[in-house]
Image (cartoon, rainbow, N blue to C red; front, side, top):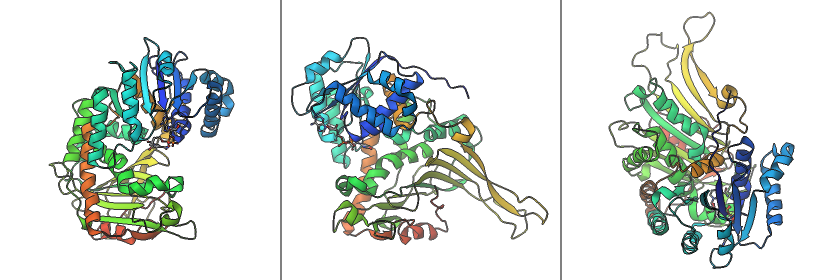
Length: 484
Ligand code: NAD
């Protein structure tokens, strides 16, 4: 396959939190891959900023190690890696103090794109935004990237939006959700709006229900303190899963451009009904033969934070009334697997003999571990023995169809960082979208907070609490198997 890499303009990118986990694991390895692909030119500059007292040489060595650790192919490209590192420099700045900013300002060149990546906790956003302003670093063409968590609830998200709005226009603020950078999620747009085949069936007349599963096999690991304040609903559903839900349920936008897309996503969120207690299952993993329990791993005895949530959402609009959306996500589940499954209704009448089998179609959009789209269709089982029906997948795993995922198939972070440089906000959340998502999330959270209930225990390595199976069974449906 011939790839068409469109180089971005020369940029100066400052990464606040440049020594942190995200910068080392995702942002800088991603930029290296964009450099290798030729999308980032050798005139561009990356400036890491953090509190540590490092000189440029020491920082480059931190980044060299990080790239070698996080990019298996980098060892074979040492010369390119060294060339990339010459574009990287470091500034020691405590975001809460005034020193160091002028040094950094000197590195920002006229005539380049200026981007500031806030890869730090949200408590520092105000400090950084204010100081960028005071040091004359904010102008019309500047853009900033902010990471999740964008608030803890509706009130804090509104406060963060107000803080950023004091210093930047909305078109300069890139709220990142890396799920939107996944190839498959964008392919969902191509599939829905680039083909005639699916859209006429994409409604409650033909779709029985939709399942969204984001299953992780890992536990809370070293994030116990953060996770215990957050839980599965706030950590996964409010942001990543909400974005998937919007992409699957939105009306066709007039254009594939930032505001048309985000207007349509916002309408979906506003049509979401509140979730009632009966449609909600919270769980917390217990110790099993394969791992410890949540309370031990998070180091929080007595915690009632959920590490699993399943819920039935309803979208009250003409397209989706009557088609439930079942959502589940959790940690320490049997496999790491994420997918959206659109389960179509059965044919209205079967012409085949009883016992020949009767199935519906399922369109599975797979996000993890491998990205791809699979359409289950019903065919005749080959061979003699009469008309027996079976389901077979029409499979489009991207790695098979388009070649191995390499430099030309960027991962979510690197694609999104390039979009920031291009100034394209299509795959970033707008402030009103985030607030609306929190408004709905807050109502779900208050459903269980008011009841003072503990989450249900489930075994590490299982599919979650049995009650989550019941959520489907009682509607005559079942979850698809969690399978990597
Ligand atoms: P981290 O704790 O590993 O790194 C934090 C960085 O911020 C370090 O470089 C530290 O030096 C810097 N820092 C802290 N206080 C500072 C100050 N006063 N002045 C200047 N620099 C300061 O955190 P992380 O995992 O890299 O995450 C960064 C942000 O991204 C957080 O908001 C996190 O929630 C979010 N995030 C992280 C991940 C991930 O995979 N790590 C994923 C999604 C979102």
